[in-house]
Length: 260
Image (cartoon, rainbow, N blue to C red; front, side):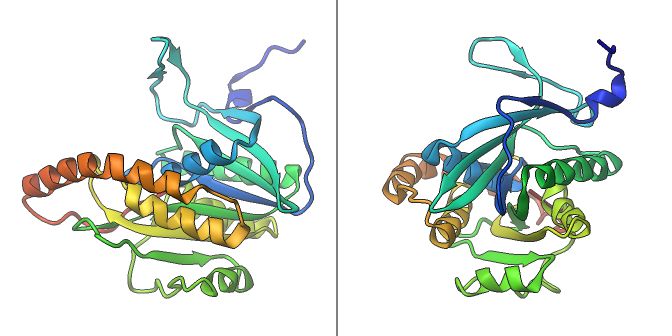
């Protein structure tokens, strides 16, 4: 057996189960502003319970590990899960990291999109947050993407699609993956919910807005009451943290970064 070199670790896929889907839809959420996209996709995963089919590790990720509930270290990774819902093949993508280096982000995006195409994915939805200078009480969701027809499907759900002159660059895999997907003839949209641009902000209410849109669009049968219960239990604690953050801010943060 050939000894692996570092290039093998740029995008190392550990398969749990090899599958091939037809007209697959991928929904992606990674750490970023308020962890809005990640929280949304992780909730869908917990609620829908898709089967994990692969786990991706990479030397392109940040240079740290995490400590789990068993007090053991574990590497950063992205997990790929799958479930057939209402005759739709849906692939969920979530993880505890994404490349932070600009060059690495592009490399990883090409590897990821190529992998998704090999699975049979024809549409990709990425989720993320828009960093505002104050916490929004009723977050709005905006949509952009690489294909007008796919964007129009979400426009019918009364989502604002006029982002020009409103936000700056869409940073990280949230923006780069849809850009790369166009080169692979994969339609893609980006769902961005308003949040608070601060490293300690947790965007639970913003994530909820994205979940509701995806549930309405694809009939995911998400238990909204369960989501509201989590919000009631968690939001007061989060609000205390957010108010404390706001008081500590001497000036409004720059609104130039928008990360998944």
